[in-house]
Length: 432
Image 1 (spheres, rainbow, N blue to C red):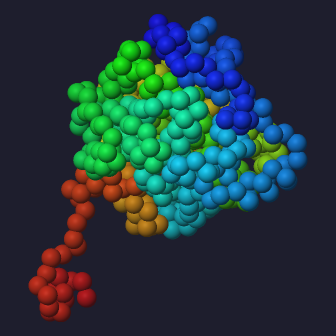
Image 2: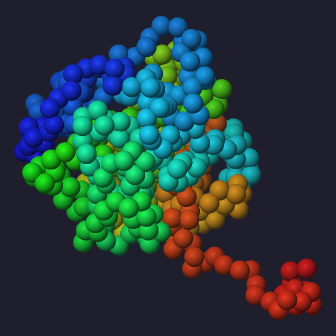
């Protein structure tokens, strides 16, 4: 019933046209029913989730490739493939994306990978997480629909991204988080001047609250980026696929290791790869997608290992709070993607997460947040268990900055020694 309420109280539907570029409609992922582009997220026929469907610019791939390469060094170089206006780069926004793809030879040697290893380091985005990508697309949809307040339920990174994007765009923001998030993420979400509301409970409690709020008159004119704007929001993750392929010289890697929170990022990266193949921008080849979860919140991993299609909700208990979604909306679709591509879903415990954060920092100079520790830790486990071929080329994602999750490593990280300011003391400490 909530989905029907949202659909019926949403802002007036906007006709198809230039504001959405090549986007043609919203399409139900379950029954295929199409709806006009509008701020709704659930199918009125079967209550399945909606996603953006396109009339992609099929034709001359070389011309499209040149057009992309001549674009700005942000996600807006891919505007011809996104639900945004052609002049989107001229709008006031944070212009995220085009982050580094780091050739991780030191980490590869440590893990025994011989086929080549890359880290897609999204900590270089404006608010230091990949969430800037998805929020940027949702912001453009909010503008088009005439919404005045940007909002979200968040495990931390999204709250900061929404606050910053709204500030840049001159919109009001009001975001909701679990009351016990890491202090760094709370400060970063609050500093942009919007309203930040802590909710007693887990992320899933926050999400349920937001779903109720959007159906209430108080939510009129609000754009919840991961609720009524979710179909547009999710498309931002495709830009990770586009960038990885372009940065590899317009080709696909053999393996990708991707963290799972709601699961949307993983499924949309797969969607992006499939679009690149369809457009002729890359040569078609097999690739495997692997999902990574924290053991303390691993409902998708549990379903994968049990051979189940149903993802049973869990109560999160992990230091990887950015991935602590116990009832992931895209969980079943993650299972579909990983099984279809021949990948897997694996999990690691908190101790392994911390060790992986330090490993990535020590080998490549990249300080990832706990989600990055999950992906690197899972990569190591996949190799050790024989689930991932070390002779295949692999890309692993680091989706956020370790400065946001200092508490995870602070207890076991600090000065090598504290000495008197003398050379003799330095020698006595065994450091000479």
